[in-house]
Image (tube, rainbow, N blue to C red; front, side, top):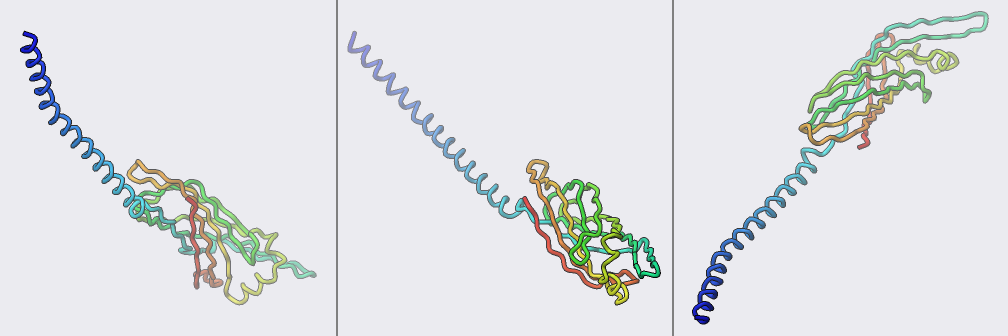
Length: 211
């Protein structure tokens, strides 16, 4: 009786082992498949991060300059020349990323002969993916910083004004509504404006970004 019970128990254990082998094999296959899937997803995300999702700095350039107001004034007997100038700049910002660029309030500074002579705020906005927008900037040159500058008189009489702008635009790039990256775009442009027609004769811009 004892021997018969032992045989039955042994047969039951062998049967359980036969059943458990396919189960273990399936578990092993599922684990390996999951690991391979995770590896493939990691490679895909890495490739996207290095190509599609790699941030590119926005590019800016001065699109146009319009003279909105000019008021020269001379005083005698001591010759004193003062000039109030209001400029309307159109700054073209190009978003080269495959995602929208939502920017906050920016700042643009106008420089002449190395001195800051004006500044203005840039209103917040949204630039679509691989799109561009024109940002209006209204700048009034500060008279007290120009009144004693003989270079301005020579430039005006010579028909050319060489000026610099420094523009800072903070914002955030949004990929698919999931990946968000903050960016600080900065551009420095030197441009020559014809006087009095106020046409841009040439310009050179340098762009950089801080991520």
